[in-house]
Amino acid sequence: MIFTCPAPAKLNLFLHITGRRSDGYHYLQTIFQFLDYSDELQFVVREDGQIYCDTTNIDVPMEHNLAYQAARCLQQHTQTHYGVDIQIEKHIPVGGGLGGGSSDAATTLLALNKLWRCQLDTKTLMQLGLRLGADVPVFIQGHAAWAEGVGEKLIPVTLTESWFVVIHPNCHVSTAEIFTASDLTRNQKIVTMHDFLAGRTINVCEDVVTRRYPEVKQALKWLESHGSARLTGTGACVFAPFAQQEQAQAVLATVPNQWRAFLAKGQNDSPVIKKLACLT
Ligand SMILES: C[C@](O)(CO)[C@H](O)COP(=O)(O)OP(=O)(O)OC[C@H]1O[C@@H](n2ccc(N)nc2=O)[C@H](O)[C@@H]1O
Ligand SMILES: Nc1ncnc2c1ncn2[C@@H]1O[C@H](COP(=O)(O)OP(=O)(O)OP(=O)(O)O)[C@@H](O)[C@H]1O
Image (cartoon, rainbow, N blue to C red; front, side):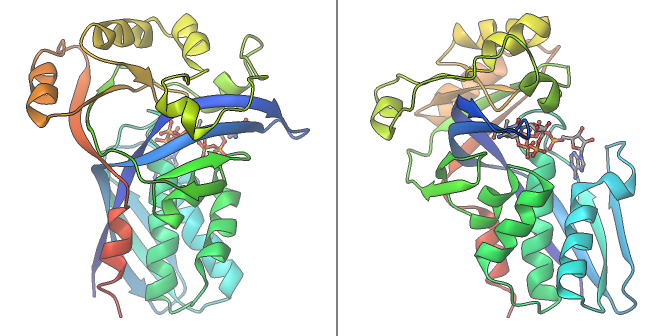
């Protein structure tokens, strides 16, 4: 049987840094919302315990693929005799701050938990996911969330599901590079949902990223002239929300063609949860 499941992109609707742990990880405050823009993963269970992962359009060795690592991690944790062939059709730009790799990992953990009949609960899957990346737990939990800690302390929130224009300037920003930058602000004061709703939040990485990547600065400036533009995660993508699809479509149509851009709707519920419900 082939089981096909999406792995949605996410946006960080704001991103603050409030401190740094002794291991170098940062304490964040952020809001995650999903987009109806996804990678597609296909799973075929194997009886021989082998794990294979093949991905279109990206140049990542199989063992470094986060979906492969997720499968390996679950297999080791549960000691299952099953294996899997995973085929990933990549749509989410790599290194874009859209959480594509993390989402592929989360979809793999969720799907294989069912297909391999592991019966792990969501909390355990989130703990396994956190080993693979700070963004993985929110994709497993499956609901838009206010996040703290390193991104793993999640409170589900229900947000307006705006239409977003997302622009990918043609560059790849390394998350590690931005989090180790000496000029990154790391001592923002704690904010609340009220501050977010009142427009008193930012993406604190924007200054550091735009100083280092002129392409991101240019895309942000362009989008700011059409809406309320912001960086997602540590970039490289920038986005702006619109209430109406037509407004967003009109802006999308004028994006300079040196950049890749797309339109997507914000989603409070991950499509993965619905898809998994199809599996008994
Ligand atoms: C920037 C965000 O996308 C915001 O949602 C995430 O915090 C990044 O999540 P991610 O890519 O899953 O992150 P990981 O793969 O765990 O870590 C990538 C790099 O970012 C740094 N990192 C990540 C998360 C965090 N709270 N503090 C960090 O300093 C890590 O030290 C590492 O060098
Ligand atoms: N399945 C995968 N899809 C995309 N990238 C992957 C995958 N597996 C491993 N990677 C590696 O992970 C790195 C980060 O890719 P990803 O697209 O998740 O970045 P990102 O969206 O900026 O992440 P985040 O917002 O979580 O920081 C890439 O450089 C790539 O080499």
